[in-house]
Amino acid sequence: MKCVKVPLKQLNDTRIKLMENGQMNMEYRIKASDDYGYIPINSDVNDYEIVDIELEPMKKVPHNFSELLEGELSREEIENLRTSFDTIGDIVILEIPEDLEDKKQIIGDAALKFTKRKAIYMKKSAIKGTTRVRDLEFLSGVDDSVTIHKEHGARLKLDVREVYFSPRLATERKRVMESVREGEKILDMFCGIGPFPIVIARNKETDITAVDINESAIRYLNENIRLNKLKGSITSYCGDVKQVSQSFNLKFDRIIMNLPGLAYSFLDVAVNLIEDGGIINYYEFSDSYEQGIKRLENACQKAGKKVEIMNCRKVKSTSPGEWHVAIDGKVY
Ligand SMILES: C[S@@+](CC[C@H](N)C(=O)[O-])C[C@H]1O[C@@H](n2cnc3c(N)ncnc32)[C@H](O)[C@@H]1O
Image 1 (spheres, rainbow, N blue to C red):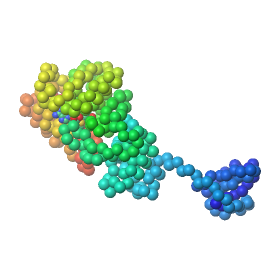
Image 2: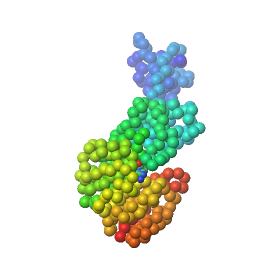
Image 3: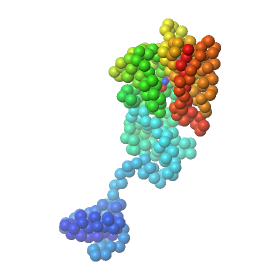
Image 4: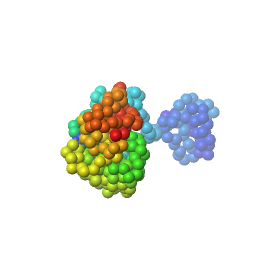
């Protein structure tokens, strides 16, 4: 390696001068031995003694995901991967396109180094079935799918292999929580591990009934009730909300229906359980709000009630042209 040889006393000044002139080779380490320093160079330099000696290459510490995958994937592929990251507690879930499957190990290892989390999993299926859980494949780190996710100060414990949970709904949960009035009686028909109930009950003195058909989700909800300091109370039920709700002998000021693929088929149950003037937080997958509004109106009409639409929002994009939409309706 071509180097400038200078007395040790001049090493620092010379290094700075060469760096400023863009003449220092940053890929190698400067060597200091006896009374001389050796600075690697990448072009001819006048006024200095030039020698040829062996220098140690710099240990490159990659500091970002792109750098870790440079040479393996194109910039566009790296950017697409980056936007697919879902971080749940100390676990990262990635979506790896089929044409990159043969690079999944390199991608998983890079994601582990970049995120410094405990484990990296990749999505192996869509969210499916009644419990809305997806298959995951372990890629890198420690294969432990239980974690605690922090959201708006709440601690949410869950097993990413056993229950549904999306960190992308955090803003929606905060919005709903902020619209809740003190003292409300609330039913979460599809509560999962309880992110809506926990976030609400941490902040508002409420009386929440939470139902889910997935035993594992209810087990974690019960743990989450213990893990968090709550102002409100939460009572959990495991089972199909259509059956479980038959034993409820109270009406609710608010009903949360976050089962966007199927919530419409539970609207008759919700409309029967809502207090006069109560709010239904209804969700569905759609390219518009019209379908959801119609469904709410029809269900109310069948029960001899009316609905006033208070608010409609796009919660998140699910596929091109389709959204997870939220519709808030006041029922009379
Ligand atoms: C999309 S997840 C939403 C979970 C939670 N609300 C959240 O935001 O994380 C829907 C949940 O509905 C539950 N579920 C599906 N069908 C149900 C039913 N008939 N009765 C009660 N829960 C049901 C699933 O087990 C799943 O946990």
